[in-house]
Every structure is written in structure tokens, then in C-alpha cells.
Length: 143
Image (cartoon, rainbow, N blue to C red; front, side, top):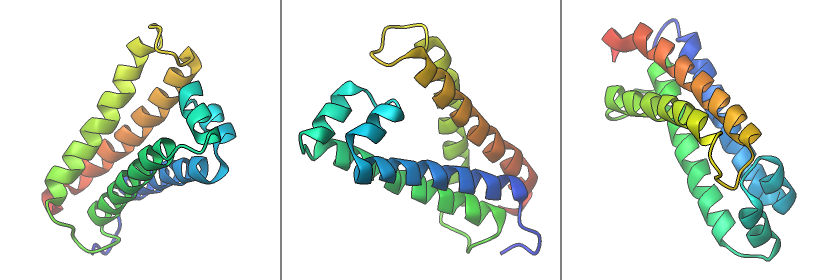
């Protein structure tokens, strides 16, 4: 663990954990939350009908985001060094940045989700990706 934890990776971990908590909220609060956060009417209807599919998908996302948050905390020097930390942080950073950039053209396509969903979610993913990138750049030699 580092004597001076990296603030960018700590912020990235917090933002990623918050995203995970919001996905968990969709599981707990059901269809209204799926609708509000732009999961689509089909997911909201499945949740309202008691289908396990939205819960399973959201649970998988929660687990992935929790793991990614832990990797950011590890890279920041807050928790112990996790396996394949450098590679993991590179992949996580790339996924957030690519998802953020991919959402821009998707906002102009008929995807079944409103353009505002793509703009907001892309901006959030880009912001989290940039936090990872800035933090990763600063701690690269220590990983």
C-alpha cells in the first residue's frame, strides 16, 4: 500500500462503486429504477413481471463494477496489490473509455433507448475512464 494514495484512482473507485450501487438499487426497487436509469422498457417489464433476467444481468454488473472498484483502490495504494493489477487497470480503463466513446454514435441510432440515455451514460463512462487513465498514468511505474 502506498504512503500517498492516488486521488484519481480513489475517485475512479468511488464512481465505479456508486455505479454498482445504482445497479443494485435497480434490483431492489425494480421497474421504476430500470426505467429511470434507461435500462429500457423491456427490462422494466421483465422486472415488473417477476422475471429473474433483470436481476441476473444487474447482479453480474454489480459484481463486475465492485471488482473494478477494488482494482482501482488497489492501484491507488489503498488496499493490497491485486493479481494482474497493471493489466486489469488497463483493461478497465479501456472499457470505460470505449464505452463512453461508443455511446456517442449510438445516440443517433434507433436503439430503443432515448438519446439522452446515451449522452448521459457516455459522459459518465468517459469521466470514470479519464479518472482511471489519469491515475494509471501517475502510478504506472509503481505497479
